[in-house]
Amino acid sequence: MATYKCSKCGMEVNATCAKCDAPLVHDSIKMDDGTEVHVSKCPNSHGKIKSPICCGEDMSCEIK
Image 1 (cartoon, one colour):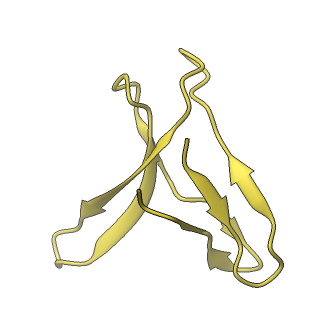
Image 2 (cartoon, helix red, strand yellow):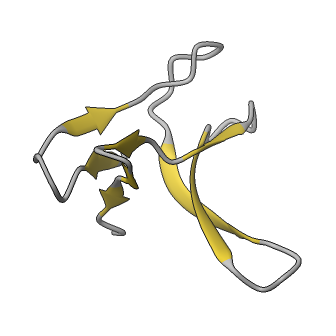
Image 3 (cartoon, helix red, strand yellow):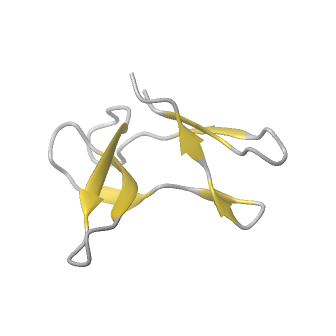
């Protein structure tokens, strides 16, 4: 499971898919301008969300 951590306050977040209860996994998507956006996605193809934000910044996730 992807665990996202705030670099400012240390809060950590885990998430699961509401459709199948599978833990979301870290991934990234490449935008048309070439930038990468970090996302959390359902491993069973139910969708993806932008990574969580805390203290006004994207939370980071250790990629394994």
